[in-house]
Length: 355
Image (cartoon, rainbow, N blue to C red):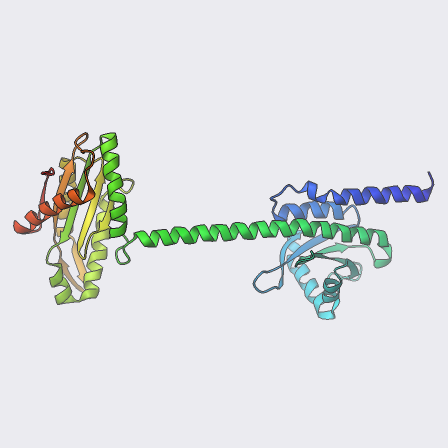
């Protein structure tokens, strides 16, 4: 075998190794892994002292340094690319989409920079910059062409990775937006507790669950006493603040893992207490009533007291009948709340349903 045949075989082997680039990077892969494999193959073609990867930022379309090896040369590579842009080398390399070796402008006369555009037929992804002690005459045309093949292979894999990450971000953004929309659709805009729509949807589920698994279930309907007087005397902003403080205080005193609270009307709120007997629900309502009555509410430097009335209806474990409707149970809680108001307010009245 003569020298020409040996060189040809060696060249074919190099091309074959470069063609296996995509096999070395299992999808989906991140740019860090792709860059690592790229540098490994590049070092087989050119002496690499340091390197940097510049990626095109989607919004601004600017080339932004993504990583540098070693990291301590990040600023130096940024300065080098700025100089290459200033003298016009960078734009020419980018336009021709061919690798280029040029004297380094920021690292010193003994260094050269190999610029490798990372681009596909559809887009420009970035630019790889390799710092090498070789001069242009020392880098063979063959190796420059092989570096071009490597850059194109890397670009194809990088494009897929960038697209995957973008789709992942968009999916996460959409999921987060949907979660936010769902949260807002279920919440009362003023107080942050659940709204009437959520109550209408969730309460029947709680009743069915209690009936099916023979668990206790109680409701406590609460009304802030003489709330219209607070709005009339102190203004609606003060009234809104009272409602928010009342909800925050109540949420601090109930079980966050099972109990929940919904705004039933203007100043009426419903507490849904799964797996809570009637006796325990009445005790909880009394504790809430006492705590609210003893709390000082403040608006514009003036403090005042607020009281609340509670109507509690409860079904002990095994007593929840099949077919019980949310409307029927709410009606019973409202009946007990009405009795609490008739008896003078600031009190708890409760009992079992009378149907």
